[in-house]
Length: 383
Image (cartoon, rainbow, N blue to C red; front, side):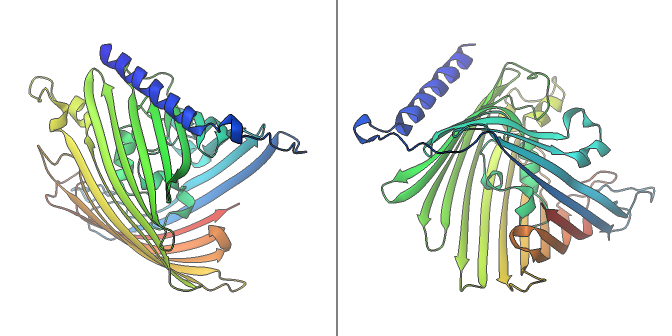
């Protein structure tokens, strides 16, 4: 309880600092001109994304699961996303956002379908509060949506850190903003969340997860950004942590050719693995169960600007992930080369072809920890 109170007090003072930093001195403040805008302003957007998958490894299905009895499905059509988003600007400073993935009705919708459901209040560019269900800033992939990912899907580490409560959709409160530190552009995000995922009736314990992301812009010419991420929390009375660092850059060689590069690494307590272990034999320290991952994603883009073809892209992501590197290491290495054609600007319509190669240090039969090769055709449209 004392630990929770200390964290709550710490979070309060951080928020107080952010509010203070976000205010303009009275001597410099001038009332904004009245704008003749009618509220609410409603905006509706959507995303359709479908795939055709072919498993090219013997006895491994399209989900990566090995079948020693030679069963399993090695090819499949699937709808990954059918997202509908509604954004309501209800005042100059306040917006409400709802995002649902209708494709999730194919599974048990109890903890699915609804993704974003939040209210955001913006004091000024230096300070905005978000409350509800959203994606807390923790890592590079939180800063862009699924429809403009340069590869097949989120990285494996993003998916795993979502299970840990640090990424993906969580319920809580955050403060974000951007300002300049001298000549260096700076962005920040501070979040406190339940940490047990989306669409939950209650938190599953009294602990919360606190995280911070800081982004520094070091080169405007090369769009070079450095991101630092850190978090602490408590789950069923046990202390947990997460750290991460990422670097991104966008180099434009000329008006047509560009190179986008992303490098990210994270490490955290794998508390679901800790609590799944036998209480009689497991260590008392959850930090004996650690997850570690890193990936590098370069993406080359060429702007064609033809009436029927806007651009093409070529990417290849390499990823290393070990979900229990200290006690039972079995690293997974994934290489995902992808070729994409963009038919409408801003990824309005896109088709991608690629492969996903998974390799494990130790293969385990009848599990997903088994080497496999997967061929992918993916189509998407934003509207």
